[in-house]
Image (cartoon, rainbow, N blue to C red; front, side, top):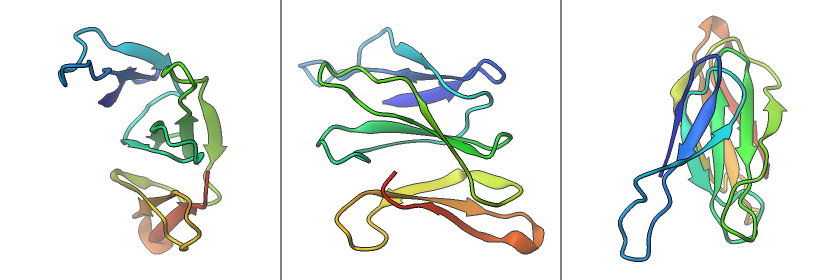
Length: 123
């Protein structure tokens, strides 16, 4: 499980699942771009491990933290949105949008006349 927090000192906390199916009491915190909002988990690099994606409304960016071979997350990679003014931080979804077998990211945009989707194909 992952949650975002921290406002101007953006973080994402990951609670690891233990062998008995419960969650660890103490999360591991990772630094991300300021003002983190929606968080999704999914395998975006095709290695079979869930990665963490964090959307940042005020900075119009997406942070991607890929999981390494030890089960920890690598430093966040930042992707700038190609367009949009304001995004609905509760409307980020992962899925194979173009049937290429890879996970894509869709984020709803609700800013005036620019309504639509910001899509990242195979981040």
